[in-house]
Length: 370
Ligand SMILES: [Zn+2]
Image 1 (cartoon, protein in one colour):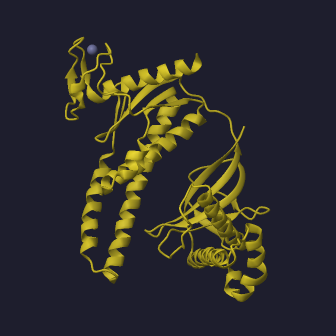
Image 2: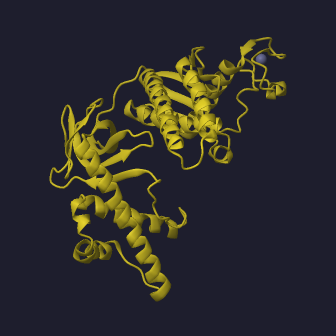
């Protein structure tokens, strides 16, 4: 079977390549903004529009002539900016997104380029990119397949990443055939129905404390000052360290789950509730949750397993997993351990919830089958 998957690598460009990336980010932004403005003007004055092909022709035949410096950029990347703009408009007209906005230097620094006749390739230590040459990477993940495109990104903390989009032929990996329910909590990252708790790595809270301190120090610095810029970069780097630790941890857990189980049941994410949350800590934890779901989803698929999402409305923590009696007292989140008034079973709150989630998930599979 064939599928398209992304592979992301940390990159270490040399100074010349950094300079090229900087220039290329700028050129892509320029092209995007130039045609956004042109489209707006054309619509205002003539009620007319520009198609992707028209923009491409105009770019090569006139805009590049007037702006010679654009020729130093990766021309495929410039075309991708036009694609990007075209898609932004398309999404807007289909009601899937807001009206396209101008890109500023502050928006994310990235560009995408397509593989044209082997213009992009990878070996053990480098990725070959058009006009940039061989860029050093840490090759952590191997694949066999055809590279479709590459995206170069520079983060706020000054890191570089290259993400390759690859079409690969794949075989389904085995799993040990287990079944598990998972309760997603905040104190313990997740609790499994088989009594195993998987706890958030401790280093994380240490870094998070540091982030809060840096955040305070940043807010005290004067707007536009050099010190503020410095503090902003230090804070961004710290955020990236946390992301690293979390990513690594999530990869390990999701691999373990996918490798050991045929069925994993988990509560569905409350996306709407998440969007409304304004607290930073909550926002970070929500973002890391959706990332966890994403990783779990594709790993389960890799191993031919089933991921069942149990609706949030199901009161998994209030039902006794032994006798099925509902105990509304448990709406009080501070109750961690309890004894069922119906059957006398003793429960750990999270383990009990995980067992119920598994039960509910299995029932959902059964009802789909019948
Ligand atoms: Zn009971």
